[in-house]
Length: 263
Image (tube, rainbow, N blue to C red; front, side, top):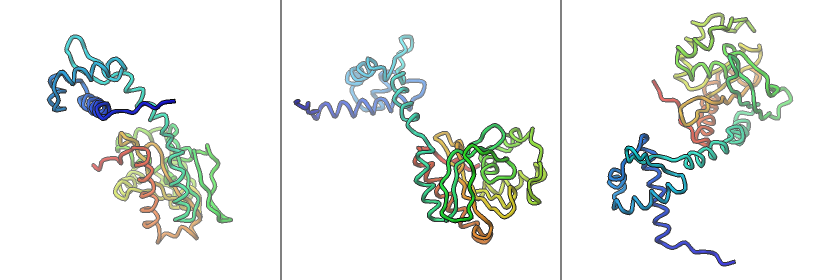
């Protein structure tokens, strides 16, 4: 079978077509032919030829009434294929293993589920005495590191709304008893970028969590590490927290996400 060699001119046309698509996409509501040509520094006739070829494939479309060119449905389909491919659980697993190797404790991934947090993935450590949470297990927002990190990823108003139907049932003597106290800690969590469960869920156990963000700055999952207090010592929590946050940030980068803007 003879392979067709792409010529230099065809490569240039392909490069221009992709640049045109990016130009039109960045415009949002659309651009007319003259605007596209000016932005691309190309002759209007060249731009018109390329846009029409892309329109035939569905990558761009033109409004007959206004003459504005915008992104077409096929471009969305291609982009959506990337989103479907981007399984953040699969993407996170190598970093979860790295976190286990660095800290030596079990690491898990959790997501918001109604007004609770659900664990959806886990990598266990090798210790005989270790934290192991069944996948699908749910924990409270107010007494877990992942839950408090979720609240910190929201605005105060959103956090209050999420907590509106929750009663602060004491799980241990360290569990938060009221929303004002919880929100005060949430402010500190936002500053640090990680949350700590200081034996609030279960005496003798500590957890540290950080958020993973999508491309819209939204927290979509939470990376956490948990272990007994005899190994996860309080004096080391700041260092461990920074490690968890750094690995969560790496997952954010791997899925094409962006950390929440500081306010």
